[in-house]
Image 1 (tube, rainbow, N blue to C red):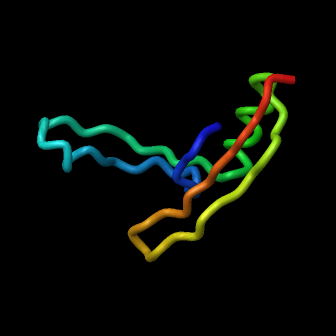
Image 2: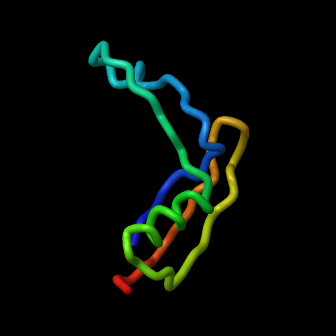
Length: 69
């Protein structure tokens, strides 16, 4: 089972909110990319769902349940 923030596959700079002086890139995959990654790793999708974004600064969320093929 995995939960993820669904995105547009665009890399964006983030991390300033950690107060550690470290920045990092965020890469939120599309639901299709996430499912392909799981399938390429040898898993089969059992359940797939999601929750739409709450607003412009809140990404959609995805849920994927898979089992080893």
